[in-house]
Image (cartoon, helix red, strand yellow):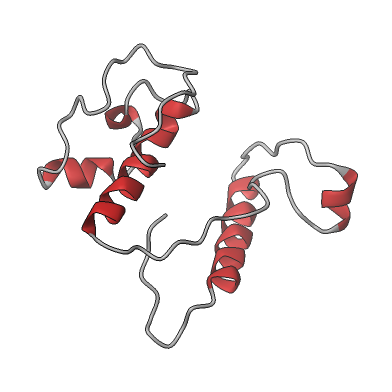
Length: 123
């Protein structure tokens, strides 16, 4: 995700923790599947829904923003959940495509499921 925090608040960890906790509760109560979790992670109360860590990065300029946006939009393809970014219904890709930033076929062929060697330049 890309977000802007208020000037006086840079507590990424607390906010990410709250998002993960709320989403996990709602996702599991709606019947979502939980992945495997090690005994150590269970003792620390980590659920098998999210990866343990997150990557915090301050965006330097528009080119940096665009690289990160491309990375986010290609992730469902990279992990085999969609053939191309336009097929992932929950993506902000659709909004940016309507704004003219992307073509519907950005990132190529629909024959990519499971491919993991796709990375935007510089990431």
